Amino acid sequence: MKPLAGKTILLGVTGGIAAYKAAALCSRLVQWGAEVRVIMTEGATRFITPLTMQTLSRHPVAADVFDERDAAKVQHIDWADAADLAVVAPATANLIGKLANGIADDMLSTTLLAVTAPILIAPAMNVHMWENPAVAENVRKLAARGVRFVEPGTGQLACGYVGKGRLAEPDEIADIIVQMLTGPRLLDGKKVLVTAGGTMERIDPVRYITNDSSGKMGFALAEAARDFGAEVTLVCARTEGSPPAGVHVMRVESAVEMYEAVMSRIGEMDAVVKAAAVADYRPAERLDKKMKKTRDSFMLELVRNPDILQAIGEWKTAHPGGRKPFIIGFAAETDNVEAHAMDKLRRKKCDLIAANDVSRPGAGFGSDNNAVSLYGPEGLVEHIPLAAKRQVAERIWQIAAERMNRP
Image 1 (cartoon, rainbow, N blue to C red):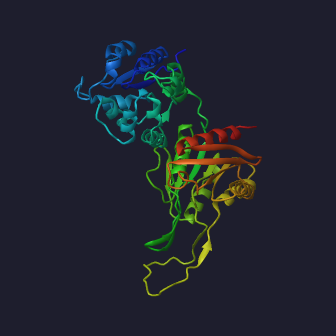
Image 2: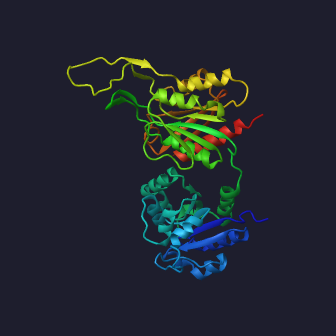
Image 3: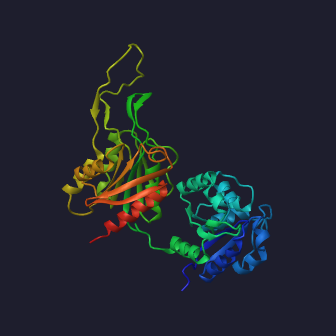
C-alpha cells in the first residue's frame, strides 16, 4: 500500500550539511507513492547535486526562478498550485527568516510565498543559531500563521557543538507528512461555531466602548477546526487581521448582534467555542448624532448585555434532545485564575474552560502567543505552555475531540 499515492509534495532543500538527508526523505516519499517536485537553493547545490535529487524524484529539479522550461506556464506558480503539501528539509535560519518576513529572492522562497497548501519546516542549524532571539521570533511568526515545524534533534552537530539543531531523521519527517496528508481528522463531519474579537458598544456614531481583544485566538481556533475537518462558522466582532479562509464568516459589532447570531445557529452545532471578549455592559442610550463637548463632565448610563456563554449553557440544558453542543468557554483573568475558571465553568454549564492570565507578558490579548490552563468538571485537565496561538488551538481541539467522542 502506498499511503501518499495521488499526493504532490513540494520539497525544498536549503544549504546546510544536512542536505544529504533530503535525498533519503525524497526517496521515501516517492516509494510511498508521492509525486515529489524538488526546489534547491544555490547553497543546497553545493552540498548535494541537483542530479541526485532529479534521479530520486524522477522529475527535473528547480533552482533558478528565471529558468522557465515551459513558455505556457510560470513554473513557481504552477508548482505552488499543484502542491498538496510544501516541505522544507533542511531549512536554514536564512530561509526561515525570508519566509517569516515575506522575502522572495530565489526560486524556493518565491514559490513558498505562492503556496496555499500547508507548509512543514524541518530546521537544521547550529545550536546558538537555533536559540538566537531573531530565529526564535521568526519561528513564532510562522507558527502563528499555521506553519508546522518538525523540532530539530539534540546531539553532535557538524560544527562540533553538541546541542539542539540536528535535522530530524527522514523517517520521522516522512511519518509526519503522512499524518498531515492522510491521517484521521479529529473533527470530520462536525459543525463548529467559534466567536472571536472584541464587541463594540456604540455611544454615538464615532465613539464606542470596547476591549483589547484582537481576535487572534478565535481565528486560530477556527483555522485549526477547519484543518481538523470541521465545517466552521466564525462569528467575529472587531478584530485585527483577516479571518482564515475556508470558514463561514459572520461579521457583527455589538454583544446583542453576536448573541443573536450565535443563538440563531446553536441548534445546528456540535461544538461552540466562545473565544470572543464580549462587553458586559452597553450604553443605555445610543445617540444618532455625534455628541458635542458642551460640559466639563457627563454621566454615561450603562445597562447589562446578554451573557452569551450563559445563554448557550442554558439552551443546552433546556434542549436535551437532538444535538447537544460541546461548549468551550474562555476566562481571561488577572488573579485567582483557577478559582475564577472553575466558578465560570459551573455557572455557565461549560464542558471546558480555557483560562489564561492576561497580565502575563507575551500572552493573551494582542499577542501571537498564548498559555492557557484547561479545566473540566473534574478540575485541571492540562496546562498548555506558552506557544503560538495556532498550536494552543490545536491542543484544545485534541482534548475537546476526545471528550466529544466519549460514549
